[in-house]
Image (cartoon, rainbow, N blue to C red; front, side, top):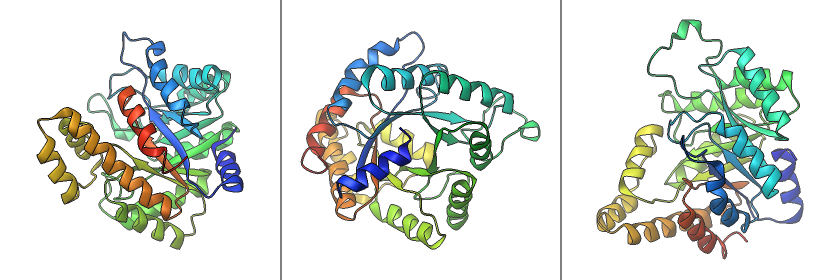
Length: 294
């Protein structure tokens, strides 16, 4: 089932947001079967879908995306979304990837520009510069459901926030029917983006991306990667529990739970949890969401 249809079905039967998760393929040398424990925990929450990134923190295991997304759909019975990036790809390669995705019984992709390679990349020869171009080609080549990214604080490579929202509209016009937001730690950024998206006439459902704080290094790496802001409350929690991993994780789950509760009360379309492939975090999310979403 396409993700847009999952959103429509969810809206028919409940006023609660659609819950979904993101995981990444295991690093090279680790089999996808090792994520079975994580998927077993996530399945207990009955997610609307699970998305699979292109690699584990840049480890380069790109082939694992389709394999893992196929496993989620075919072995666990959960709808999956395969991430697909284009910045370093040719149109021929994209068509090959789309064929693999269809052959694996996957019905949805998340279309992204992707990170610009640090070495060996010539922008003047790139066949794709923007995600909207990829979305247009996916729409023309296949009947897959197409999700796209939204950025509550603007894309890290775009200093003009209003322009980031305009790009969001362009992605919808190109064929994206669902948006998944980049992570954020202050809900006001998401609400501001949604206000501007509505003003632009964007009608596609938007899932709010939430990442529980698991460690100081994890949070610092993510904010440097995507440009998310840290509110003072979270900074104080990081300082207080910096040397106590267990308490920091609990505080992080509680903070994320508070974000989700407010988002639910404000009737967001969906909640998308960035799990970082941590079974203990998945279990913690299960506990914290049981009274909020289920």
